[in-house]
Image 1 (cartoon, rainbow, N blue to C red):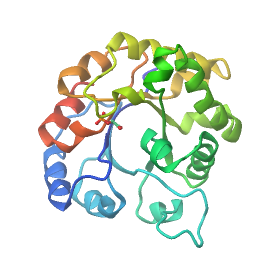
Image 2: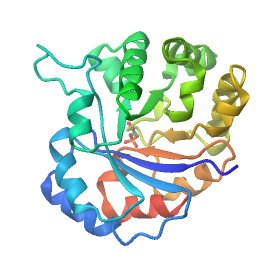
Image 3: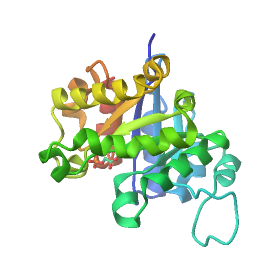
Image 4: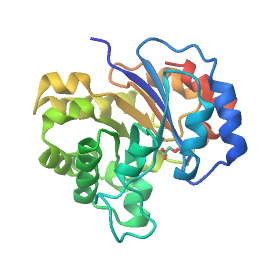
Length: 249
Ligand code: PGA
């Protein structure tokens, strides 16, 4: 079975309308493989402009967060229903910056994942260990602590509609990409952890690697058997570089 492969951009709080135009113009004529999707997660104010500017069937837009409630007195928050209104299909959840800067716990992330799925959105669930955890031999324990609450909340069967992004925190924005072998080893562990609950489901889940991915490292990373694409931050703000990463699948 050929798993869906996804190259996802994470603009974080960067970009402007000029980049929206430039990115759409640069990507609209891209020749992608049949099983490939490109996903661009922009700040919420740019979602509509980007959707309108994109003409490529295999290029989708996504948000970077949502609130776990349907609606109400939550000033500054964005609901799943609002993303539905904009025909947004994907949402990044549990990014390490949301966890570390905004105090999102794995239990809250699990609620957000459930809420996204209940509203027809595909969650891109981010998990990753810190440098301290990696060096202390706690990588698997850390990943398990981030995955288990989500499995408990939604049930393993629902993972057929989830994308998982493994992003070692020490590799994000630091220029220190995990080696392809190290990333593959961890991806293999994540897939086997999911497979212990349901082997068929584990085979369908796209596992993306994130953390300083660039055009020079993408090809070797994406060639690994359990790496189904990437979540790309800094390099996704440069049109030519991001195009080359998309073509590395
Ligand atoms: P980076 O960010 O590619 O700039 O390391 C990745 C991410 O945070 O998703």
